[in-house]
Image: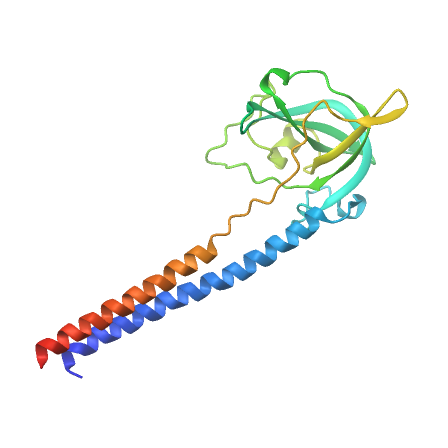
Length: 235
């Protein structure tokens, strides 16, 4: 091997090794992400458990996020209306309503109403719920506006701010099904369309791994071609 080939060879080996390392790192991330999503899906779809062991006044624990629970409480008139939209439906609001459970006030995400129904009257009183504990991630400090408290328009379900402004605990359950007491009987809560939680965790690691491995193949090919050209010029 000529001296002119040593530097390109070392450069080629370093590049291929780095790209392969990045590809295998993405595969490790893929396995971790799939495990995490699997755990969340298991909590989300499990039989509804009593809320009590999973309720924390400081907010949901990470390992309880998406956990399916059931409880009975008391709806009050206190609400927060979070601006949102639904595909094929248009603009509207998520209705967050205070529920008091065992003397502890927190917010119940009841679901969606069209914009015109924002301030429509809604049931209060005893309610029983099946839903999922959620610590929403739809707040971005850099881009989410502050709520318009005069018009009761919020732009994110940010539990610390909801707790501060509405004097509730930073805890939330998203309704899957709910019933309230009417004329002495339990009836379906149908004043709001439920929006049960969905798991939307980005998982592009497989595509990233394929990209890095493909680049490694290209880098190897380019290195081999360069070495061949150098050899042709030196023979």
